[in-house]
Image (cartoon, rainbow, N blue to C red; front, side, top):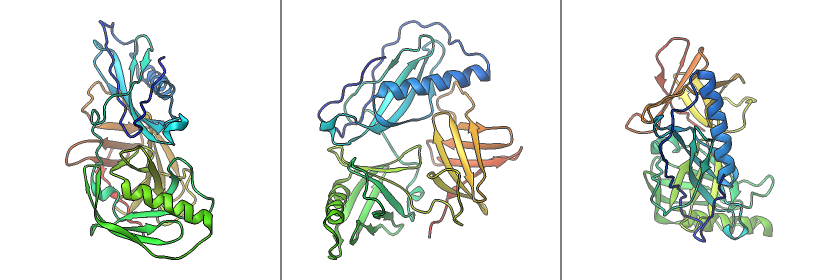
Length: 323
């Protein structure tokens, strides 16, 4: 396993280059074998990335002739000089040998795009990290992207607002952010100053597999948010965070980590759905336990999630309304 090396430019997206020789066919043959292989691959990529709070995405499986799986890994750079920069890496795993490699490459080598802007609009996103330094206990810094092009929230002490545009994950502000002028304790004012500075300089928006919303500056500083109220009506959910979705009258809270999708329901029920292995990297990702099925499409006009119970055809989910 190689050790990743980060350049002094923390905002760059990491990617890998892996030369693969002639490989024999991969050893997995049964669904159980593939599940075990996926678990090894995810663990190896998390370790190879060297990132803190590493989150490993689903694998893109190449043919047996190439014999590699590729995964996206997101996390926080561990080096002190990186100042808690958010990093996205690609990891390659050799299914035959277990060799894993993750290295950095120029920004733009990986195109990161949100499935669609409505998936984040109208949701009150609450900050859980400001510039890699966490957030003051019981403080509240929020962000809401309005469907009308307005951005607003609480910066820790004062309320702020402005106008924005979002195009395939690229954020721009069409008016300056303005805030009220209330005074709070020095610690909150310092957190507010850092929050507004990073927010005003942010140019990239990513919706991570964990359900977190990540805003990053070109210099690598970031704000990380989770939905403040992911499930309506509010109930004690078995998982704390996730992407709130609506299917008819049913509210789902979906979290995808590696090759498992966790779906929480408004009644507190939680199910884990393992991924079905596919040799086609362009195919939708399907998670099922035989009783429930979740389908994730990452590209195209129908990008997003569909859900079904029993033998029913999965129907499209839409972002859950948050009041």
